Image 1 (tube, rainbow, N blue to C red):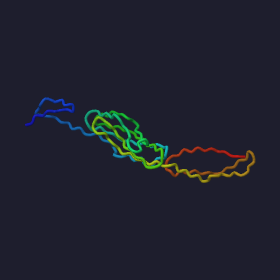
Image 2 (image 1 turned 30 degrees about the horizontal axis):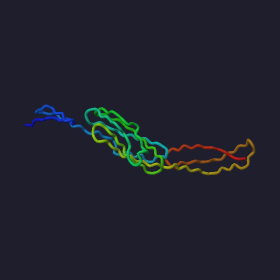
Image 3 (image 1 turned 120 degrees about the horizontal axis):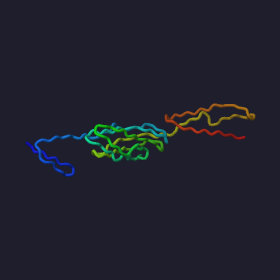
Image 4 (image 1 turned 90 degrees about the vertical axis):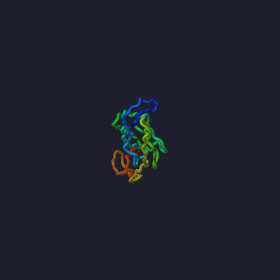
Length: 173
């Protein structure tokens, strides 16, 4: 037979026993290894969620959520700390706000007290606004005072992302 002695990380030892009960801790997990944001208009924002699950015994404390990598300033986690009871999950939002056009990437790092940090690859593409105008000039010709006339102007957005348009009218004469 074997005599079992438990030793914790601090070096504390238990009394010897002929039996032992072992509870293996499962590592925490994230719902996705990667969050692809797709195309987002420059200056726009898109938010995606990642689910963090505490699969081990005891409460899991998340001490920091941060983004690292080449384009870390293009992504932002919605929260930085969290406490997750055993067997439960919490969502952490991540925002992508491209400041320039092009492919962007980063890594979401979730630091916690249950082992190695959890990581999620982040990617997205900033797209420039694509506004087309049916005509750049509207010529109303000569009109008498108080006479009205109209012309049609069509604005098209081919970027697939919402655009904000401010219209200013002016004239001469």
